[in-house]
Image (cartoon, rainbow over all chains, first blue to last red; front, side, top):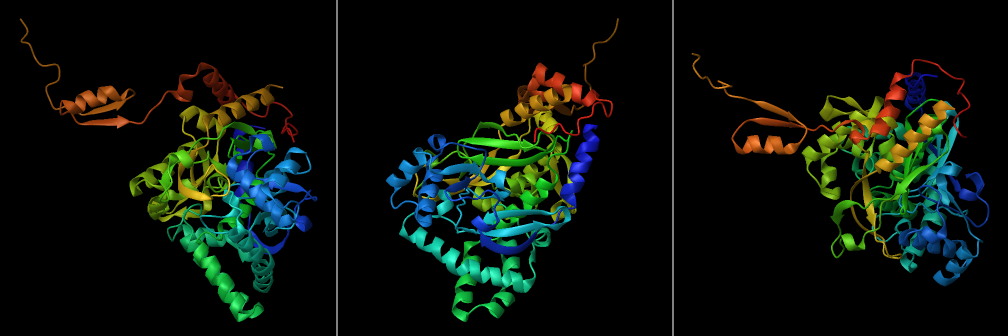
Length: 412
Length: 71
């Protein structure tokens, strides 16, 4: 098949995708291959030996949460002893921000792409600062994790059932017109989510629990992000495995390597060392404390959100650094490496032009422009958490490796 | 005998493609310059350019590659 034809099919599958948040279930019940002692993580596959501090910290917290160990030392022992089965979440239709750790007892959002019969999963968003996904696991973090799993998740599950699901694609489209870029700025989308859920939560929950849940979702600021990530993955998975397509279907980082997947190259990862982040630090922290780029949240950029939509979200630069002009220029640059524009996600400052969609490995290599990623910065030491936010880019090496593999495949 | 005339007898405006230094020198001399953000394709890497050319030259459905996605 011609590359242009293949890319057209790939794009159409992505464009026609849906994202309905329908349920919350324990990971062991819904995530394929989620056996006891399975630990899913962000980014391409990685061994314990190469895992960064925040990812190890998250795993320590998750193991204690599961009751597999009581101390960090015990976790280290079972990790090195081979008892823990590590794998990339992407291999299990799942996704997670930063460390992205998912273990069997964790409650996960179920997001459906009905148009293509795909179901994807993500844990619930925990807030900013000292949280599990950034490698923090002290008593306060563990208490919040238990509250989320045992109280918040059941309430949301009932509310989602009462609501008949939440249309995430619609919320994303609206929020883009309200100043969000849906990666590091979710003020509008989070509020729209609360608006969609609150009446249903009141119907199914007790007053005190609903008030606490609403307060948490509101103050978390980015609570909707994980569900949007799952929805974005479901859309991009619909466009994967199209022979001859040069469109990127995933960008993900494990804090050691950044990896990309390409539609016409199936499930293979093309990796390079994870870059550092140019960012704004919380008081008391600086670049010397930072971990290299980490997390699956670049799936938002891959679907045309995040930096690709910054032109419509000038206020995000207050969080990640830069100027409104820079935000505009960044999104405009991303059109140079994409093959289409989103039919539903539109940017008012660009006269309602669709967001740049369909990163083409050929265009990245030819132009030398790599996909920019808006992202959080994790402390490189486990147990600390998020220390800032900023900008980075997927390394060119990922794209040149993918291009070489693509040419090789065409020649066989 | 020809009279000597300036090479450029009116105000010049420049669009510079390539090395920034040329634009900077002109700007220092008060010449209006627009620096175009341009790089050679694939950073000038011949091997990558050849690969890109090969893909761009493809003229249609060549092979039965429907199952070539390394699933």
